[in-house]
Every structure is written in C-alpha cells, then in structure tokens.
Image 1 (tube, helix red, strand yellow):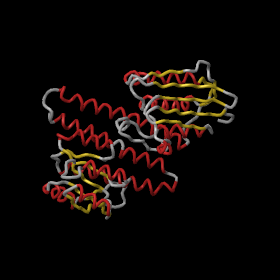
Image 2: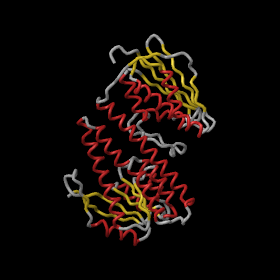
Image 3: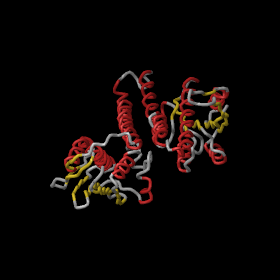
Image 4: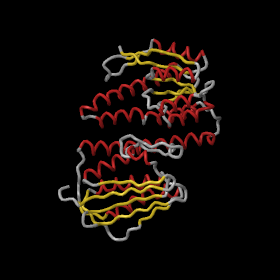
Length: 376
C-alpha cells in the first residue's frame, strides 16, 4: 500500500484532530491504480509552523485554513507557488470567506472545502486530489514513452476542469441551502461566476481536442486555395461581441485579397487564437490591428494590440503547453494555457515561423510567416 503525506494547517485544535481522525484509516482505490493509497497525517497550528514543515519535506497534500494567526493561508499558498512545489493545496474555508477560497483556486489551490464539512465531503475532496497526484506521476513516468499529450489531456481534465467544477458545486450547494437568503437576486454573483466557469471549461475542452488531433496526426487536412483576409474578418466577427463589451476596437488594415493554399480550419485556429488573446489581454479603450499580405515566398500575418504587454523573461513560456503567464492584471482572464501552443504547432506544420514583440503596458505584436506550400 502506498502512503501520501498530508499536512493539516488550522489554528483550531478540534478541526485538526477531526480531520486527522477521519483520514487516518481512510484509503483510496481506483480501478486504474495498482495499489490502494493511505495517508500519513501531520498537523500545524500556524502558517509559520506549516512553512517549516513544507521547507524541510514538502507534503503531497496540504489542507490549509484561510484564516491563521500570523502568516495567512494565502501567503503559504503563495510560497508553494513561488517555489514551484508539487504539493496539492485544498483550502479550508467558511461561507464568509468563500470568495477568497474561489480566488485561491484561481491562483494555485487545487480545491476548497467549506466549513462545516462532513466526513464524506472531506473524503471526496481527498479522493479527487489523490487521483490527480496519481495521474500527474503517470504523466511524468510516461513522458519518456512518447505518450505525453494523452496523459496531459487526462491530467488537465482531472485538475483544471475539476477546480471550476468544485466552485460551481460549492455555489450550487450554497444556493440549495439558501445561505444568502430567499431572494434570487442575492445569488446573481454566484450565478454569473458559475456561467463564466462553464464557458471557460467549454473553451478548454475545444483547445484540448485541437491539440490532441494535431499531436496525434489523426486530423484529416484539406488544403485549398483561400483568402486569408476573409478568414481574418470572420474571426473578428466571432470575437466582436467580447471586444465591444470590453470597449476594444478591432480592425483589419489590409484591403487586398491574400491568396494562400492551406487547410482553412488550421488558418482559422491561428487567427482566432491570436485575435482572441489580443482582445482578452487588452485594456478598455484599446485597439487590435490585423494585417495580412502575400509575397513571393508566402504570406505574413500580423496581430498587434495596445494591451498589457508581456515581460521579456516570460517569452520562453508563451508557446509551452498548459502554460499561462499570471500577473495581478491577468489572473482573472480565463483560458486553458493551450492556445499559443496550438498556434505554434500549426505554424510548424507549415514550416513557418511565429515571432513576438512586446512592451509591458504598451502592447504586443505576433507575426506569423507561412511559406508557400508545395506538398501540404
């Protein structure tokens, strides 16, 4: 039987001892696991004590209270994220601080458990965390065997989709129990945030499907003569409602047709992702400019914005799978962290290049060069 190290951080002795008592003899098993998993429990009453334990031997799972004497729970979470530790954090929260717990899941916490919780609720959260740890380890183990993307797919479904589902489930439970009173208006914020997470999950699933199709080579490519400018205008029409909502102007400055032989869906994915990012990471009153031109060697597509910009040290992260650049300004922007990775893979299929220029606070430009295709 395998053992996971669990750290319980709460200033209330009753909470710590209760959690330890529930999990001490609890085991987790799944059909795809070779052995059952049990938990070795360690307790800490303060954030300072927790950090000492984490620094010496990072636990596999941390059950972390929001409100602690001295160092707060979110500060412990920030330390774990800053030092890129593999510990999974489950926030323990009360209804009064539910918004803080939701924000914590957006900046690195795996899950949250609202107080008061039942033994079944705690065990369910631990089962999900255990499953995720197992899938994460399998991803690392099988990376050498050329199966990375498939297992990243499973891991992301377990992790990234689980987190917003937990938030939605938490809100639904609060609404079911009428925690904010009988008036439906009291729950408008919870409903809006739940709908936003559903939309984000849908986009994430589509990104994952695009990535796996491209990576597996299973996608049937259908090249034909097309006008890249028309594809760009179609992409703008799709993103226009969001642009209007955020007070961002999106324009196409090119006027002449840009003929090119390519798979229309692949060109659409490139342009959609770049324009979507240019809108999402822009500022109110900002602008997105799209230009496309054909030349002797192929085509050049450029998407420029007047948005937040990207720090130069973050450039290497841009095209990595499941990588998102988080700052105080971008942490609320939803996404899978796959869009630019997908763009890069498609550009590589065409033996093209994609370059980025950016200045913090002023904007970003992505330039895609695709050579003429002889044998696509």
